[in-house]
Image 1 (cartoon, rainbow, N blue to C red):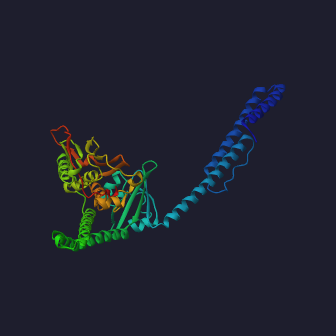
Image 2 (image 1 turned 180 degrees about the vertical axis):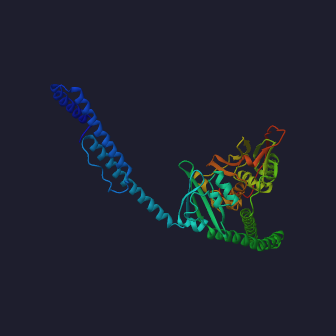
Image 3 (image 1 turned 90 degrees about the vertical axis):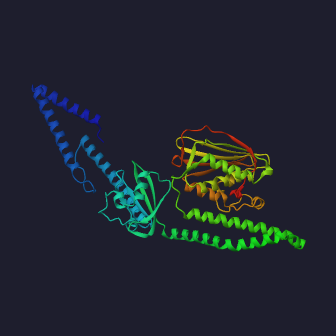
Length: 457
């Protein structure tokens, strides 16, 4: 194999031999000049051959390098080896791409690749049936020109893709599609489209079933409870052995009535439109009302209740729903806090969010239960709900109401150390009226409770 050092030595040897011979004949300078021109011409010829070879198509193995010698032969062979490596790598990548395209073509979900200019780069076969895309006419077209729904336009340009978007399919109002977008590379996007029509129908059927059953159960339960109350009012006329069963029947009918009420509320929350952040109300007034209402429930516990809230803060949304959610948390705290315990409600805010913390020093919840507390009918301990009469739906209601107001619920708790329920709202859901009033801590001793979801407690 020739190297540059070997080539240099070869050139020196040629010049030395030619120089010695021409010196004896007395033609040193002309000979060296002619030799230099010859070598330069050879190098120019090799460069010309190299240029012609590189100009041809190297996609196939037929483009063998020109025959040469010395360093130029090594250059030609080296470039040829690199070309073969590149062809093998390209073939491997092409094979992977073909497999990816074949596998994606077999998927029922649509996959669309969108470049940083928001134009279509590639899509699979399912996208054509779901979105009506046409190949190759739509390649390079803007995705928002092909999907003209204003909600999709807003979702696409918001660049907040934490939650999927559900819309009617373009040109087909009977088909429901779910869009999920992820960003990658240099602000490019991968969009996955699923047909969730059947799931949507099943979910609608479930909601209708729960709502209808709850509604139908309401009347017979009310009748049963009414007769039981009438019997209890005349308990002295009953045989003593029936008094305890009648009381237990009345307690369970009341509990069934509460469950039906909460199921109807959940069904209503799931089917109603989200309240827009237009109506506003005083947060301090709402929390004070919750405190005063709950103080009437468990007077015997004599809780130490503190409330800290800036009187100028206003929440934007449905006051009735937020009353239900926050009272559930406050009541839940009171329900599982022993007598003379402490319940604190604190409101804090900055430019981006507002948080409402409901903290108690009650019995607490084991960490393993925290992720499932907002599930319907989930119970940390069945005996607790039996004692407190909870429905197991309270925290599920809280979660749904907060979601309808763009909020979220976080729960922290330890056994024996109490619990802290934190409601967080974005800046679009609160405002501060003028003039601002300093926050005034309010204290009172009382008991607080509402049918709390912490039937999980």
